Image 1 (cartoon, helix red, strand yellow):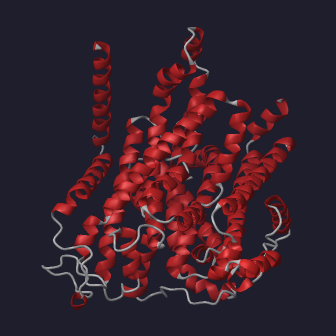
Image 2 (cartoon, rainbow over the protein chains, first blue to last red):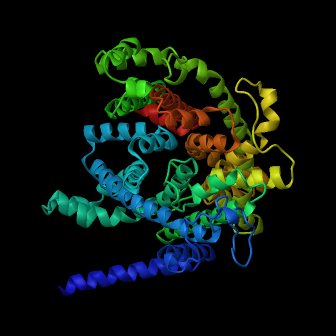
Image 3 (cartoon, chains in turn purple, cyan):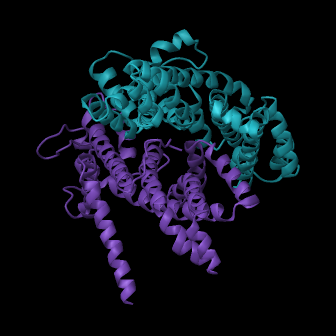
Length: 294
Length: 318
């Protein structure tokens, strides 16, 4: 009991240490600030939005920004400020849970493949390679257009599709530790496979997998918003940045505000997640600039 | 060496084979088929039978797969559902247009990326590096459709320098395309260039810290001679593979950018065929895009093999 408490305390201390290292550099601090700001905004924004996000008013079409409508109104007379601060909620929820799914299935399959090796490993890696060579946009569009665009489809679909890259990373990380002495001695002590995975391998590959998951998060957000931009993501009138940009794009020669506000929201969130992931990787001592976006 | 090359090519072919199986099976297990989509509400009785007969859907799946795959090998993808056109006739000009766009972006992007990467690595943590690295982080993380929309807003609408929308027919010649593709090319190459520049940077920094470069410095080799003779050849080699992966990833970006600029390439075909549930076209597109991906990676692998003497000798020893 006492030991377990001590272990828990160590985990919290480690998390605190990592966050402290991340915040010690300006880029990491900026990233964390933006990300935390967006998360707080997403959680609390329904409490203080000034207008109803789906209230259509033909008399207020394309009003320029004013003290009444801070970011103006869109082509249906809806308040752009309201829709912009609500616009990150779906994106954040879908991509966060999507990354968790990607992390879980990619990580466990990767560790499994690295551990068993042999024929099974060969076959799985071939199939993963094949999936990697289908462009993400084609696969995602196909899944979404055939199964629908509800959150319940989008989360597992994105999670599945962005998890295949994690399989490779987890497998490589497992390969690195598997020949080490402590694994061999754990085997010699007669530990079961599960116990070796849980106590010996996982603590050593966890960092690499988590950094990979953080990276996937920003790419998944990019993929998700591209889908909604193309009209295959969340369905209107749900406020979503990608959808807002795509709707306001045709009229941007006279109503630039309706397109700039969601662009600012989405770009700042993506940059925030990216800087955070970068700082996270550096704090754990992993160089992510040598990785290609697959 | 020879066996290694053959092995890589075989692995690529196996990957493509699995891709074709996945796409074929994926379309097969989903509810509905070409005939029910095409006939919509009249999909019953004799009309359905006749349609199955005509499209040859009344034979078992594995036979259809074999005849489809055989056709694909001969650049024959069968008929599309909308308009019942031969797919390869629809695809031809669009593939060409997309290739023009992609190769222009690559030709512009790679030299700039090399230059930026080398500059940032050599002036590491000093002013040029800080400025360029910040800019690359921005241009790398912002999605294509946002940078494309901003480019149209600023360059085409506010400054009125260039056309914001591509208005050329699908069969346009390259010279007709050229003035129209400036903005799309900038939008596509921004992300790619930034990614590559970062990889080149970290690769150069790694080599600069290696023993043989330290040795060259101690021997008194002039700085620029050291950079060009000792650092760059060793630093750029590992970057080739990663660059290939970036180019392959670009395929998705090309699709989105083409939609934003209304460019008559594969991207719009992807969206149209998926909205219309034109599954034969989707299958054809999947196999073509996957072949491009596998091809680029194969070329990168082989180039690395050719250029890296260490890998050659390793293979001979085995």
